[in-house]
Image 1 (cartoon, rainbow, N blue to C red):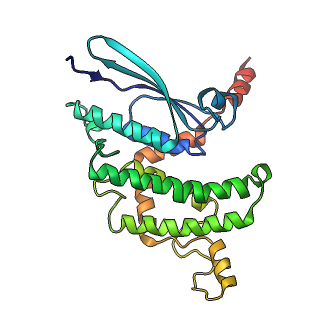
Image 2: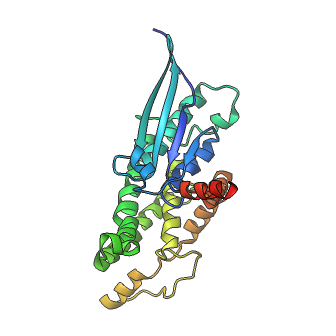
Image 3: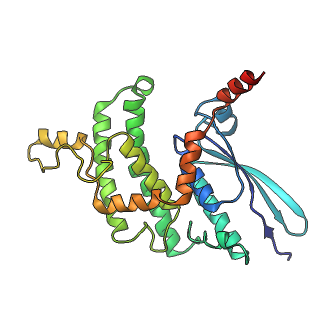
Length: 277
């Protein structure tokens, strides 16, 4: 049976880097191999052409491989964590077959090998972050407060989402402990999604931007005081602050952030083209 020789796939990422697609650009910059990016907002014509619900991100993949003959296959991956898991798997597989590219070899731990205890840990924490911190907490705020005029305002749901966020964040802080990153093996795709969620929480004032900056850090006893405490930014644990500093100091994060700041939407590109006529 002929062996299969894999190559780095041709990639096209769709999405707005002010949203969850930032997680994917960050990982792509960590890998530092070719990709293309199309800037589009959710529910736009471009987004609807690639995602069944018109959401972002979506990744169009053209995978190349050679066995008895050269072949390629095109497919779409949706959901930011699924995209990053796929990219980490491909980078790891390439690293095992690459002898002379130190950059690729250094990416072997972005996503652990399937069917190992490390991968089980990765998968369980990835789903924990996606459900407990993202969809049940941060997204509830965005949907029913930031976009309340679209989806309907729901203050009670938002307050409970903040309570959920506070509790889930404590779980992740305990998980990191004294390690530099979430997994003992080092920086991984888990750190990208978790750090992104922390950035998101700081932007909406659910999490302090610096240690000791909360309005009232005292422990309250009455239910009214407890409710007021929930609505305040959660104190930034010093260990979490150091962890986020490490993540944000990575060259790939800095490059991704610059790409986010400088991204140009399709309609803006058309305006610029018109101005040159």
